[in-house]
Image (cartoon, rainbow, N blue to C red; front, side, top):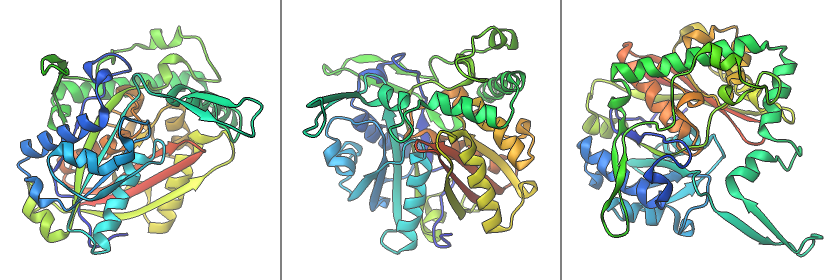
Length: 392
């Protein structure tokens, strides 16, 4: 896809993703927090910011001074860089990395910082003057109203999960079983120390410069049992409070550079991480959970690869139904994916979600000796996105 673009191994990191209103991050300007957090992560990774010449940021929830986008975030990072902000709902975290690859491939930059973030806690409410509406003023709560209403279909995202479950004749028991397994994967990764290799603890200071607390874990995530899942009321077909993700806050960052620069910055220069291919699809209305599987089908056809050739499979799965559908469409055992955790469990801050998924997938691939890495997910508007990287 971009033969001149590489991701230097180990030049990445993220915050933990505390659930809605469960941490001091609920009180911060998330753009400022993300910039300062990236600077700290790069310092810990021993990557001087002087190496960067461009910054691509991605977020989906409005934040104070968003008009200034990448420039103000770069200033918070301590480096005056040019750049821009992009967003594509929950595909933002992966799309930002793809755009950074394009920036390198074009020759416009030598080293691009990718920084994605969102804060769903205390998300803003917007007031819109509507001269042609019967109501002259419309008010929208950015997170909750958008998740509760798709203006193209008139339905909520939850309804899309139920509709897709009925289309594929999914059984509630399999959805509960998959969810229970995803929690086991996450806690196994946590207990093994895997998450500590990519997620950093952060202290949040208040306006007086005093500590408001530390963010040291994915707050709000607790172990769950099959009995507890079975006892939950269905909100729609096969969907309960336990088999969908939760709103959260967080950030994630990585670098995309040239091959030569990657060797200079990488913690392990012998490891090469390259871009292979990317695909997107838009499926029929209110069938968002099937879109990622269709994007992967398209991607495999483009590349000539098979699922058997993929070493690591990891996705953004806001509903457990997503993974069951993927398993059916691709004839792939869902036990063999998301080995180190997934957004179904650790949360869903939109912007950084797929960036964290990618970072975890690359770390896992290195542990396994390299190979193809498949990362995919869904986004508002019944969109699916998928990309393949190679760790060599």
